[in-house]
Length: 332
Image (tube, rainbow, N blue to C red; front, side, top):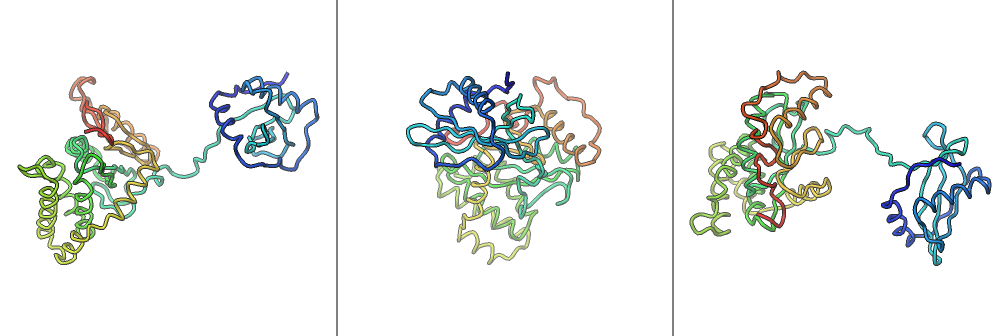
């Protein structure tokens, strides 16, 4: 009897979609005996409830990188259409059929979410832990996290943790968030401290950006004014800063939005701690645990444990740093 892993219904669903694909031929290799090919076919039919109208062609054995197993490809056809090849593993003794997902973990997760070219605060560029936050300057949950979480992290971890923001304005619900991001980036091009001073102020006073009239025009005017004032304090090239503000080039912001979307970011704030995603409202002790784990993996010693200042059910939440839901497109 041929032992096998259970083939799931999602597999069958994918299989049904695949039948519309292009024709393919099995690779060359050692052909299975008719008796073994039939056992493979019967097992696949029984596990997937494949309709009788589907024909199955079991390909020959080819070498695999899994010890004691070869690969075989299976084609499904119906109504003149042939699926893309599905790969299975067949044991050398012909007694076990398997299918599993294979994932590449050769890359350091820290490198999967880039902080390249972004102004950082806290630790140096080579800090053992880098936290990349996808931020919306008009997002109230981002503002709460910005005010509560990051100061606590900087106090606890000092130079062990570097914090970087990537732009992810939710333009559908936050009309001035993109201009705020562009203005802040104009300042960042000349002054990293100026960038963070501006971001700190905008997050702390987001509700004031539209003035008493609460208009987009007033919010944009205020953002530009704040950016120029901070530029003056930082003694940057005022002409270059003004040109950047007037141009409102959204290329970099759009690229950041695309990268966030490709990573699966749907809400703000979203954090990546050395590549590990953190979202939702979590007690800050959980964030400490994630950072400590990343430090240990990097060969560093975390700071001594911190006793919770309040009961666990009332601990300061992170990611949203709120018991409210994260800010999502389509909701306030």
